[in-house]
Structure formats: structure tokens, C-alpha cells
Image (cartoon, rainbow, N blue to C red; front, side, top):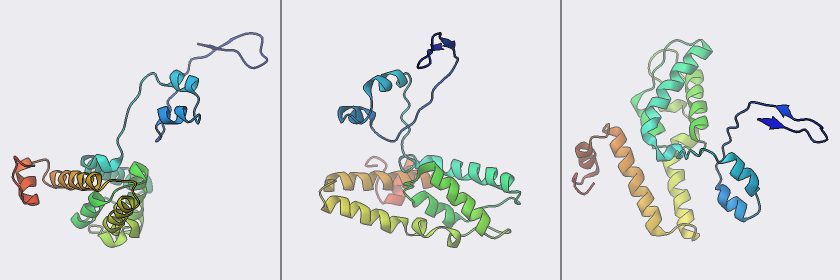
Length: 187
């Protein structure tokens, strides 16, 4: 509740909260002397681990709707809809830039897309359109360079595919299993 300025002679009352975020493992950073341990323990009162967007694809449809509504209002546009194949491409993309990247892509679609009718995938950035190819190539390179095991890559691919099937079937496990050509029990 108080701070003493460097060179100051009396404490000053303060009422603050600090919210800090990082995409790095701070415990590893501390071990490598890249982050001060005393600062970490001062900041680490309540920790929240928020998975990357690619690990929570079930949030993407709600985020798309939120960003479309927000951007339409902010830009003074008429109500817009995305074509189903546009949404499918957005669901299939890996989102290395997470929610900020999705936000920017939605704004791009609204600005460049037609003012009437659904916005098709032709207005998507090239990296989103080619996203699946880029992801496959990246994973291939990780495995061949020894940074990821084949088993881990297969597990990740399977997890992503199951997640996407569940998202597309609104988490109906029986339908997702059918889409994947397997049984609900195996799924």
C-alpha cells in the first residue's frame, strides 16, 4: 500500500493492481537467469493459463460472431455474414497470432468483402487459405529436424482432427465419430 521513491524520504500511499501476461515459461526463464525470481514471486499471486486459440477451437465461432458484431458497429457497416466455407477455413487455421490475428482477419473480411451477401473465402488472407498446407509443412520440418517426435506429431494431428470434428458436429460425439469413420467408443 506504500512506495518509497528512490531518493525519497517519506512513503507515498498507493492503491494499484498489476496484471501481467506472457507467452513464455517464466520458471524456465528464471532458471536461465533471464527473469528475476523476486519479481516472479511478487507477480505470481493468481495465475491463469490460457491455451492458444488452436487448442480451443470451440471458442472460434463465438469469437467470430463477437468480432463481426463489434467491427460492424465500430466501422458503421451494415450487418454482415460469413459464408460457411469461410468459417470452415477459419476453424481449420492454426492461429499463430491467436485472438489478435483472428480479430484482424475479421476486420479485413468486413472491409474488403461485399456489402451484401455472405463474405466468401476469397477475401481471406493467403496464409489462412493455405494454412493447412503451411501447418503440415511446419510439422514435417519439426519432425525431420528432430524437434518433435513422430509420435507427438501424430498425436497432435489426431487431437486437432478430433477437435475439429467435434466442433463441426457441435460436440455430438456419435456424429463426430461417424464423420471420422470410427465408432463413438474408439473416439
